[in-house]
Image 1 (cartoon, rainbow, N blue to C red):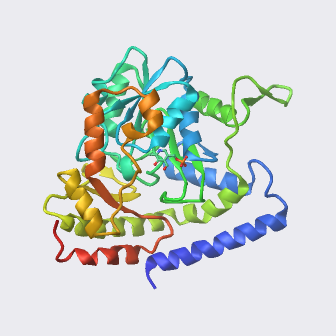
Image 2 (cartoon, helix red, strand yellow):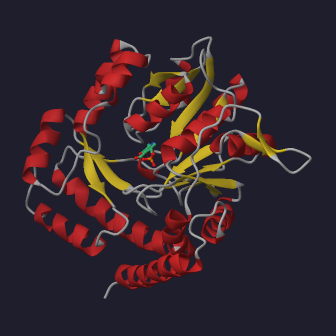
Image 3 (cartoon, helix red, strand yellow):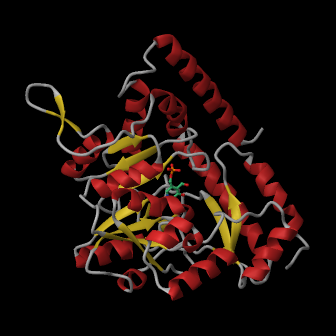
Length: 368
Ligand SMILES: Cc1ncc(COP(=O)(O)O)c(C=O)c1O
C-alpha cells in the first residue's frame, strides 16, 4: 500500500464519519456550521490571510473583483492561456477581460505582457497561477504596485503553492481558489476567497450573501448588490479531512509531479517542461510540457493516449471570449499556437498517482 493509499483511506473514513454525523446532527442546513468554520480556520492557517468559503472558484473570483468595486467600464487584464472561467468571472461583473500574452516557459504573464495591453480603463490584473505555478507573480505584483493597479490572484489551481516562501493567495489584493473536481483538494465543487484588507474582506462577505451586513440593532440589511455563493456544510464536511492532512497530501503530490517531470520530456526531443522559477513552489495541479509545433503535440496525443490537452479550445476560440474580450490578432495567434503545443497530465485528487506514473512507462522507447 502506498503513502497515497494510506492517506486516501484515512480521508475517506473521515469523510464518511463527517457526512453521517452531519445528517444525524440535523445541522447540515445551517450557514456557518461547524465544518464551514473548520475549513475556513484551517485555510487561514495555511495561507495566513482571512478566508471566505464559497460555492465555486468562479464566484470567488467574482467576489475578488466586486469587492474592489470592479464592474462596467473597467478593464481587467487576464492571461490568454487560462481556462474560460477566468474570463467569465470578469464578464459576470460587467467588466471587460483584456487578454495578454504569457511567457512560453512558465505559461504565466510577465510585466511586459501586461504593460503591452494596458488601457485607460485598466483597474486590475488577474494573475493565474497556471497549473499551480506562481512564477512571475512577484514581478507582476511589483509592476501593479508601481502603476496603481490591483493585483488579484486566480489561484483556482494553486492551493499549496508558494513564492519566495509566501503562500499563493497572499501575494496580491485578493485571491480565489477552487475545490472543483480536478483541484488539489476537492469537494466536487467549492471555492474560497482570501484577502488581507479588512474592508475588502467585509465587502466580499456581504456580496457573498445577498449584500447583507449587520447593523447596530443586530439585524442584517442589504446595503449593496450581492448574490449567493456560500459553501454548504456538506461540501465543507468533504473538504475538512483533506485540509487536515494537507501537508502530507502535498508531499505525495510533489513526489508524483517530480517523477512525471522525469518522464514527460521523453515524449519528444522537442518537449519542454513548464518552467518553475527557483523561488517558486508549484501546487502541481498538472504537469505540463510544450512541444515545438502543434503538429508534434497532436502526434504525441495519438501515440500516448494518457496525455491530454487541458482545455477544449484556445481561450480566443471560446465564442464568449471572441465576442466580449479584447485582444489583438497577434495575441490570438500566439494563444492558439501555445494551446496547440501544450499537453500533459492532471493529478486528479483521488486518482491513483502510482498508476498515473506507471502509464508513462510506454515512453521508454517512444520518441515523436
Ligand atoms: C484557472 C481557473 N480559474 C477559474 C476556475 C473556476 O473554478 P470553479 O470551477 O471552481 O468555478 C478554474 C476551474 O477549473 C480554473 O482552472
